[in-house]
Length: 393
Image 1: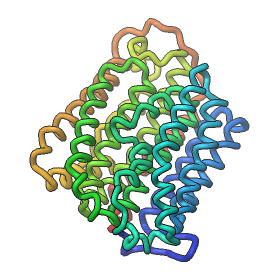
Image 2: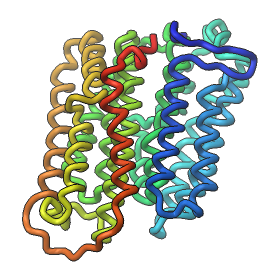
Image 3: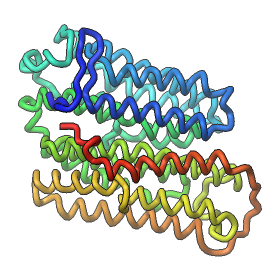
Image 4: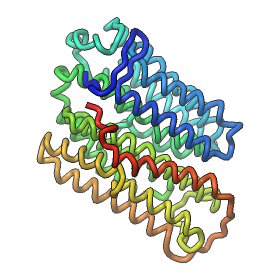
């Protein structure tokens, strides 16, 4: 298994290396940002704080069975958050979709862990030699990321979730899939190397297809949710490239995507609170009405397409390098995905910023929101100056 040479802590219960520490810090920072951004603190603190605690424990577990229990336990407060705090009647359907997809896909993982009867991640390598169906072991993580073809639960969950649910889902919960793959895939690579061409193809085709789908979306939340699927497709492809550049790029992309997508959902919620709609075609001229919010839209749209000077740029460069190193035939697919991503991001920004505004809107106090935007952006810029803290292997 790939372990950080810079930091490692291990005992019978807890296991922590550089990757675990980075994701734990992301969980803590995301929780603080959510608590700053929310206007319903008294209602959501009983779900957001338990979700954060479970995530921190999940990222620090040594025992695979304990990891699985916490991996699934986080779904309970998440579903409560979506079904109780969501605004639309379809929120129950979205919660059920999420539970069915994730629990069904994770049952083979549970059976595998019980069959291997193992006590720690570090000793799983020899037992996985006997395991003949690694795709079943990986399915729980592929659905949680989610991989293209297993992503249908994510747009529904994002659209029906309240602001806090969308922020924690985008910032940290999707990273459980990437974390699980980075823990399990290297130790059973000898069994699943034949799957790499298939997984790379699905990931890159899925990233391109979802980027194209983003262009035709009318709901802002749905657009950002599909954008997350495209980003996670890149992350999955870099993980399956099985080289250190790709692994480091995947972790950096997860951190960058967590912060930028969380901020985008906050921006969407701000527009919804003013205009009481998420229909993109109805947003016009916010540049003249609220120029300060337009600035933040520009900044986070730029981070969404990995524009410098943010950690998103470095992560995408590492991911592209690892995928092209795996096969030069992927260059055209990478190019198309990048172009489509830039196209829908710029199209969205131009659409909501310019033209004549014909809708009435309500102004609210912006101090807390601006603080949250600032705290989302600062880590993305600072981390590019401290690259040594982001190199895991």
